[in-house]
Image 1 (tube, rainbow, N blue to C red):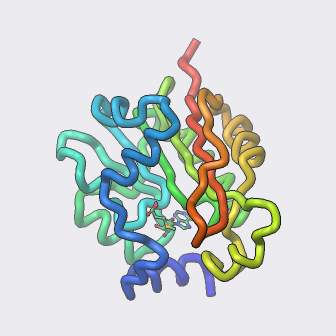
Image 2 (image 1 turned 180 degrees about the vertical axis):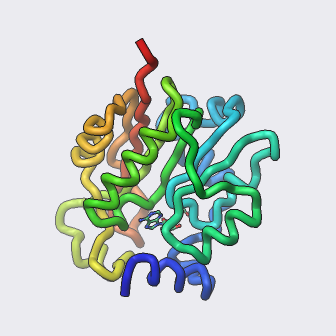
Image 3 (image 1 turned 90 degrees about the horizontal axis):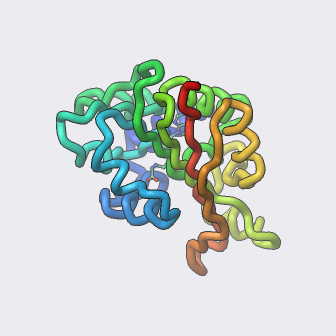
Length: 201
Ligand SMILES: C[S@@+](CC[C@H](N)C(=O)[O-])C[C@H]1O[C@@H](n2cnc3c(N)ncnc32)[C@H](O)[C@@H]1O
């Protein structure tokens, strides 16, 4: 099964175990943990992007005056996003604030590179990208497998790899938070990195 088929099935059959219907406050509180001003930046942003948005509840909660973009592999979900006024074609150097929660680890390496390149191209100079990922706590690989397995066994991405990927696309890490615990039932830990596209000199 291809990744697109997998995610189409998730959205067509409302498999909420894969796209938990987190309320917008979840994302705000979650990304605010980093302490680099995500809520304030969202409040002043005119153009935003969610990479792998799932139900896109945070995007949907924002006023019409904000231009909203999403990168989404599932055509089933893309159609739903477009109906909600969320654009799936990205602009060049225009996005003030981008975020991605639990998407990159699910993608093969080549796709991770394409996603980061797309974010870097879409951000305006000075724009920020908050990216959250799960990484494995040593010794818990079996538990992870049972809890959050994907078709090709892709579920984690080390923080060092994400830092490398962002830098390779010209983004500078300006804040990071590691070792976020998800609780006993999901024995993994996560991190958030805030990248910035440099201002033009
Ligand atoms: C685990 S869900 C997370 C959804 C949401 N961010 C959340 O935290 O609830 C992963 C999301 O990434 C999307 N996705 C997976 N692979 C992708 C890819 N290669 N390109 C873009 N989106 C992708 C899925 O369709 C889904 O919307």
